[in-house]
Length: 207
Image (tube, rainbow, N blue to C red; front, side):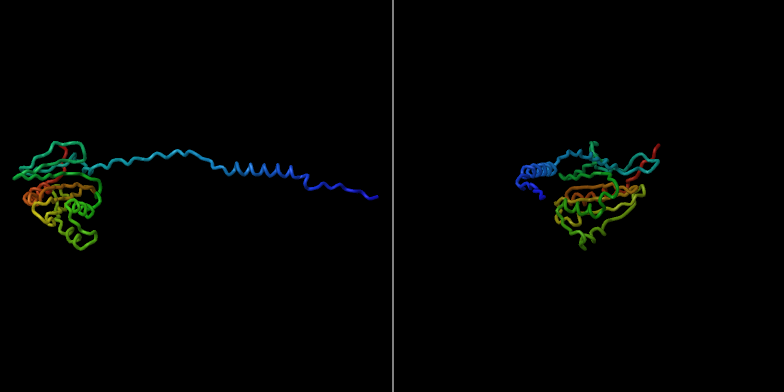
């Protein structure tokens, strides 16, 4: 006896297949959504202000001899230890004493910066710059601190042009900059007093 199997046409499965396909599409769509997160930014640490040169144990502060005829400017807020005005024959220069941490960029970088301030160009690494750096006068201050004095009047073209005298004193791995700005001829006239100020630099002992 032969049995006849009833085979359903495949078209009867279309509704079921459609439902499955719709579920897959919805699932993929949900997974592909971009999820946004708010990340809390880490707090930025502020660098501590760089202190001035650390005094040698047994000392409280710096001292120097003010040149005759130089007027000390009343101390204001800031990192300056002192400032002076030098006046003569309707000309005026200003001298400042500023302590800085470490090498403060080094002598070469500062010389290039000072040259730029008086519009004198010397390319880094050039023989001209190296020769000028070598011309710096070296000596020890009264307190025994190594010092380099750079005379920028030697490369300033005209007597009435602005120029700079600058000395870098090294104390306990830190630096003290003594800088005088004014007319070239006025700086030349006061160079010996400027040098004497630098040479007198020392640390005052506690009493």
